Length: 153
Image (cartoon, rainbow, N blue to C red; front, side):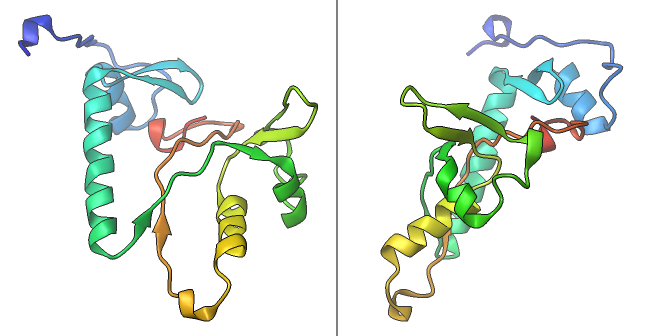
């Protein structure tokens, strides 16, 4: 694709709220657009870079013998209550109810889910070692989101 036809919104000004250099560069070069504190839209250039990074991580993890899986971002609150971390997270965790009034949450992390997967399917030590990984979006309503996209909302 020709550069003249590519969507690449650049800016000469460094955003005043971007504290670290990498964050400033990503905003100025049109890789991401900041929609709010810690919330970003990945623009075409940034999205291409993100996909390439994901592919490099995937290749290296696979080379190391790990197996990729994908877990849902929406999680049942019961798993979090069982682990004792449902109330520990406080307001940083986005909690919702589904149409059946069941407590759900947008997972800030996946330890509870992967533990549930292991509990359901790994029944013997003979199944071990097992090296699983996943790459996914997370949501944390950080009090002070900083470090750009490395630790956003």
